[in-house]
Length: 438
Image 1 (cartoon, rainbow, N blue to C red):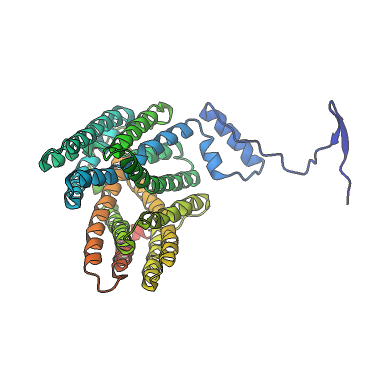
Image 2: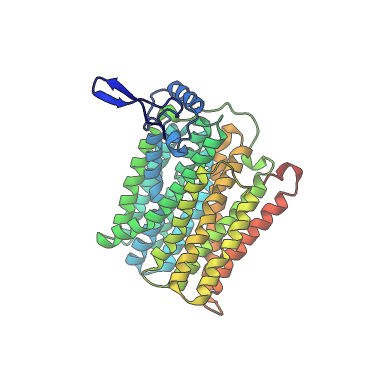
């Protein structure tokens, strides 16, 4: 075995470097200008180094700051609904009223959200998101005040309608990545995977924080805490002007709904949302106890982990492949619930959730490719709106199945059927020559 060579240094004898070995990988670096990062990236490729794609992603200037703001601003998405249900039920002793109020907010938001996104595309993220967020927060504060003073029920519906201007922070964050990484599809795939993992993380932590604030402090505390997170995160996100995509020149192309392929894709999102909505309700009904929340959170945990792993993959799967995997994996909770074992159900939900993030990442990638650049926020908001509509429909169907179940695990047939429907819709849409890549 050859002995290493010694050389003299100011500090004394030391091993001489081996010139046939690759140069050492430098530590995580931050850059002030995009030109500096591009020069570093070219040198890194020439050196043959294989770096963590997430480290490379966040070496770009400004990305850590807007991602942190987006994370804080998105966390209340999983808090506001749970907080509203808890505080309304506590004040009016009616879960039916609480559900009706939150459903009204969702319905009004599904109409207003695409219009807000259109304004974002037309005038820029900072100019629209801040006033839209302030107006939506005002609606949440009015709702909390009405609940606190036990105002008539109709005032709750009027107040929740004011919250419909919530800007789609996740969509704006994805639009920033699409702008920054427009010439690097591999990095954009990693960014989209990370954004999906962030979504899952927010929907894991949000309900837990909402329940903690409402139970430990007072019923309206969850709404107030969510409002503080929401406004602070939005201000931090929009303050990062260096990464904000410029307003693209508009052409008279109409709504993204007119883009070929967009309507079938939104139908797939609608059915996919029904998977999520029904799984939540039937799991809560099946477990029916204090451990229902943690058991359900395992599905989001599996999705979060799968999203981060999917972002490291060098190849992406087709949407049909992802939906086929989801359909197969959605049978696991049904089989696990049939055994009557809570541990088996928890494991089934964890594994079933691993198909969620790849499906959403691939679907959102198709939305980005189909939508014109000057309507990107509107296109992604339409996808989220279809997803939310599917969640609402799935929740209602799952609730009916849970109430009329001939056997305990009957409700878990609903998310399985919804996943199969999404796969069938994607397969039918993919029959055309232009969409075979789906």
